[in-house]
Length: 112
Image (cartoon, rainbow, N blue to C red; front, side, top):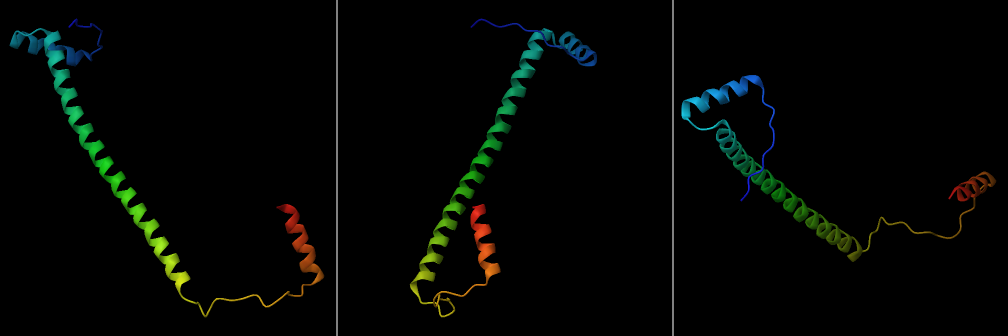
């Protein structure tokens, strides 16, 4: 596989450390940077995998809880409809309204 070259701008202190370790180990500065970058990216991949796994676990837990909420709401509605509610009101015919109430009603109806 062909290797690609690109420039990296290093802080002068970091460049001095790289030069020092290159001299001490006999490895080229390029080799040290490539090895260090490979290790860094491997560690980053492990961290991201852990973060994404945790995020996926939380999304799945949320989705499960949402389906439970929907199921619970359905059960509540069914229970409410199953029995007659003595507190439920009923309309007993047309109510008489005042002229002000009728005028206000027509104004509000015109807004919709």
